[in-house]
Amino acid sequence: FIFTKSDESKGPDKAGVLNKTKVAENGKRLRKKNWSSSWTVLEGSILTFYKDGKNQSTNSMKQSSSFSTPEYTVELRGASVCWAPREKSSKKNVLELKTRGGSEYLVQHDTDSIATGWYNSILDSIQMMSVD
Ligand code: I3S
Picture 1 (cartoon, protein in one colour):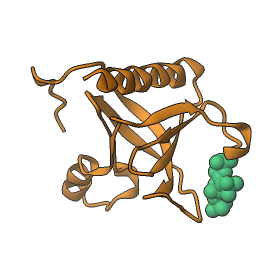
Picture 2 (picture 1 turned 135 degrees about the vertical axis):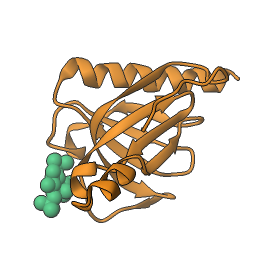
Picture 3 (picture 1 turned 45 degrees about the horizontal axis):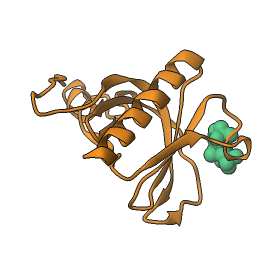
């Protein structure tokens, strides 16, 4: 996986490992959370959660290729982000991300500064896209 920043990409770019779980899809609440860590990339208006290599096949070729397979690709245009209310999760530093398409994700990191950095970057991206 090679992270390249294209000249056309606007807005803040960020990458790192986060915990995430999808909680709703197309306006429908999912029954169960499924927290897993993901290599996460913000590029322009797109937030991509890549599949966790550790949970994939032990075959190393498969593993390296599956790591670069997006698990969720989130369009931030028209989305909203906030710090999740306490009842949404017992974890600390949980962000609640709602897309225009009615999908919802919880995104989390134990380190306050890292979680806040993602909050700010996602918010920046959402606000930048709404100006276009
Ligand atoms: O909203 P819930 O049901 O308390 O979410 C927890 C479950 O998803 C749990 O999975 P199991 O039901 O398989 O035990 C997870 O392990 C927990 O992490 C979830 O709660 P938190 O508060 O961590 O989001």
